[in-house]
Length: 405
Image 1: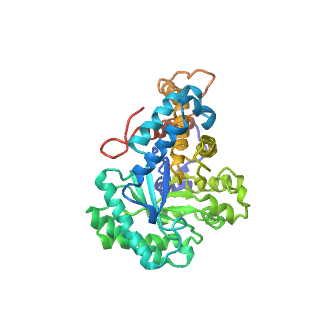
Image 2: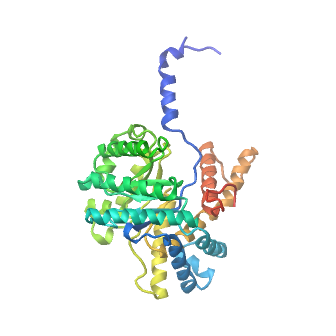
Image 3: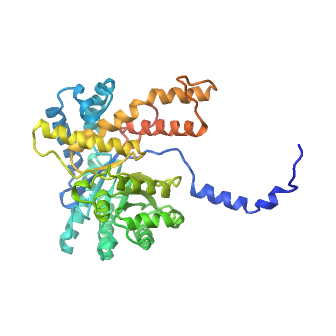
């Protein structure tokens, strides 16, 4: 064919360098296993029995207040055809793996204590982790939340992390797989680089391989949202240490001046913050997690337990529909509504998505008036992969499963 430009490559001479940068920043890998929740336990209350205790408490609530699978659909807004299957999956999950991700909290849920008292709780928390390792109940992901540098005492924050890691390794013999640390209230972008430097120094001191210690930030203030928008080099600057970003609903809504009765995950202010998080971390491999519901059943009555489940399930469904596949749970009752909503979400379209992908691969029409674009197919495959990870029980070895349900 005839062309006009003699040497187009001369006009785009920097392309190779730009393309390499794109490939490094936005790898676009297939979704890896991600926990469906993070369970948050204050450091002074954690023990070697914590995970089992949460499972027992949630199972007791299930047995006492959900008399048949048919009660699930009106409570959790799920398809009645899925009720029996979801109910059985909840029962099995609470028995086999009630908690997928455990965070031992030294921040808001723990409060400010004298240094000697916090040091003691660092040691008791390390004891709890070692006991869970020995019992085989340590969740696939686990770690701690340190105090924020924004509180003005970074030395206390780093001392707690240092002591916890040192004591866990001493007791367990090595650092168990799945560790991460949550870094809250990041009001200044510079705090991230300072914290990453502390992690690097700890790796050297503890003899850990480079980038063993990853961390997740909590987006809890408009200041954080602002620097996420203006800092395109944020993730590369942390050299692979930033693993996740978790939304902190109560601090964020308080910072925005919302009244207490409007401090909820499905408020439009929260939707806007999550959309910024999505844009800032798109394609980077940094996981996203939603926040929590700070409530538990008002009493032991079935009416109050059902009200809590319905409220929590609606918030979990809101998160899932907006592409946030993880959230924070703060009470054993949340496990029932969390798993019910998550399982129903992933099961509802599984067969349809599988059929559409198969039709695309076979170069035939999917039926039902659907015309899938390549981007849609990639999204369908990613949704099926997430469903596989969420629906499969933890294998006996303790690692994430593989294959389809």
